[in-house]
Amino acid sequence: MQMSLSKAVAGAARDPWHLGPGELAPGPVAQGRPTWQVTRWPVSRSEYDRLVQAARQPDAMSLTASAAVADTGTSVAAVPTVNDNLDGIPRTALEPPDPALAVGLDDVMTAVNAQFAVTAKGSTAPLAPVPFSAMFGHVLPHDASFMFDPKLAYDHFAKRWIAIVGAKRETPPGSWIMLAVSQTGDPRGLWYTWALDASLDGTTPTPHALTVWTLKDPLAAWKTPPGSPVFAPVSVACQSYDLPPSAEQPGAGPRIATDDTRLLDAVYHGDGPTKGLWTTHTSKFTWPGDGEARSVVQWYQLDVAASKAVQQGRYGAPGIYQFFPAIQPIASGDTFVVFGRSSATDFAHLRVAGRQAADPPNALSNSVVIQPGASVYPNTRWGDYFSVAIDPDDDGSAWMCGEYAGPAGAWATRICSVFF
Image (cartoon, rainbow, N blue to C red; front, side, top):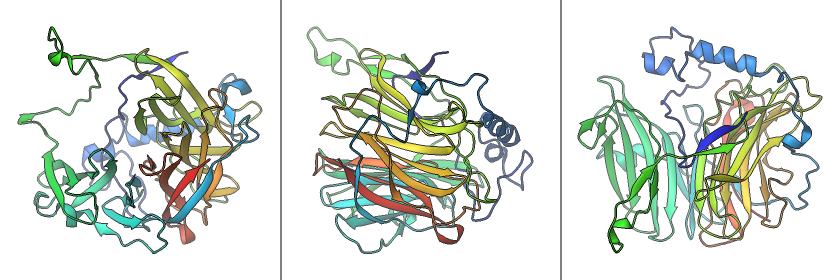
């Protein structure tokens, strides 16, 4: 059966339900949590847990080996080289870390949950995290102290840094989108900051529905004769996908939640062999001869104008679980994918795979380890996403960050650059 992806890609709306260290996911009646935190997906948490358990079962008919690329012995000879590999922000009181990253001409900015840090390229000094409340304190609404789900970007045209963070208040209920733009090219300097009320569309109350549209002909008003821009939703046919099973760990550790099939990131590249809209997510796949379904990386390169998939693929291996991917094409024509991985014999860790412009279509290289795991992770929450960004000062490399299982069951993050 063919599935479809929206041409204009956006992830489904997420709520800010984070767990503290050692806290278990609540059931349908939950420890005083408001309903919107208990029902995290369109179904109840207990129903979602049942669906994830069912996702471990193999498909009724095993798919052929050609339906996916195995992360062993691929047809792509070259593998990425990992460079500038350093510790990211260490564990905070919230789980999971939601690691984000942006790269400028001289600096790398990273974030987890409600903290961020800046380091110079090439530096090996430990990071000095700063709470986002220090950046947004003068515009943060009263008592909206819980901040979460950071996103970072660097505008290499304007040479400015961008930070977007969610914020919420329990009583009275409220939520905000916190937005900051650096005043200069130095992320250590001053920032312009805003707090946008998430319950309003401008000044109009909104029911929080999510609609995705594509903008066509944005310069129509300046043409002769003048016209109007056109907004239209378009779907793109793609490989089938399904709810992934949770990932095994060694020993008696709990299974790691790989979440659902929502798109975890999207990036557009304007020219060359990597031209198009790239996106990725976690999915389910049953390898021939494997007695249980596994979670795999599923990725796409979409031709926006033609409304079709130029490339797409599933990526994993029998007996292992790969999850929370992020993808990035770069100016050289190379593309990199960062993701987490674990198995019954391997602690949860961070890896990267990639492809060069001349590689066969739909293929990825064997993956290489960025940072091995060090222990069994005692919680189930992971991710919720990783991050990868181009280097605006180096056409041949990208930077990335993600989560791994650190010592003594604590999550940790790692930052690195990669190239072919």
